[in-house]
Image (cartoon, rainbow, N blue to C red; front, side):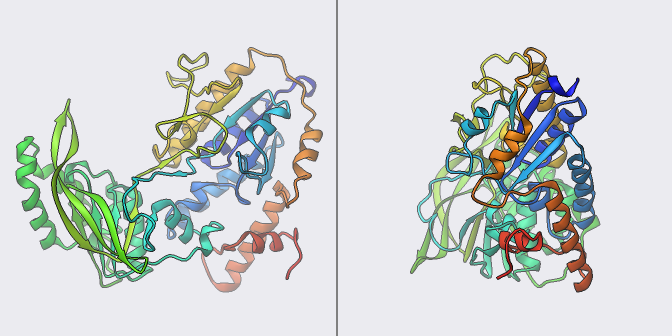
Length: 438
């Protein structure tokens, strides 16, 4: 493809889906403008993986650097796209790109709409994860992590947050409140090994006995759930804190209560299990009870940002009814001409980094199919760069990122740390020499 007829595609969001999608496009001769809300690239791979996983994070960063080093990718960081952002989706489309791939993740927060959700001490998992991974502005947000914490959910995010609460925040008691039974937990053994040594085994057996009649009623073998939870014991990390972790199965939160704006209790309703065509669903019994808690964290998944500029339905961006460019039977097309979605923007909270990577690449393949049906609009790349750089704020380019990485690496070396991160945009901008030091 010669430069004169080269397609130019905007990719919005530089997490794993966006970066690997951009790389796929660039490797096929497409010029890419990669817009990112954060200063740094990486998305949840940078700001969602547990603190201690340095080797995993560094391995991913290496791949991200290689993608950004491609000559066909222009990076524009610190640029928020959305109805309330620096640029709207319409602004991006008006620049004349041949196609747009939205891979901005799922930036919305699922809410159950329960009484007491606004009390201090009630949080969403994503905010907590962003906080401990130092993503501005969450890095500076004040949280009330007390001695008795409850996490709603039973996935890997619950495990990460319980680990953080116990080993870093010194919580004494952490309870995973699970709407369904032990057989439906969906954390992996590899993640649970970091938490399992804090599980009160006597308490766990009592809990298994309590839920046994409900499992028997749908002819579910309790051993399935027991194995799902306890198989991690053989690889358990040693205890480094004095705390108890426990499960409260078959319970759904119904309300939070507090005093003077501070959370003190959570009400839960006991559930039974109903078999719906081979899939178990929780059903409330009307029987409610109180748990004494200082902190409640909802780890129940995410939804897309309704103020992004795409139509939404059921927590997702709307896709076309009949895709023209499916990849492996999956639809990546929105109702807007030439606008595609990939990664968590296509299906929120689905899978981990590997999944987002694969989905981003597939979305890019769908974009490639679309591009074959049209002639290049011959967008002036310099005009795009000028327009973006004219925003009234520092816009981060690839060379800026390299400077920031070098400063943070030197800071880590000086402090004897495995890694060091600036916790505010201001500090990062100062380190890159883009704003004056106060």
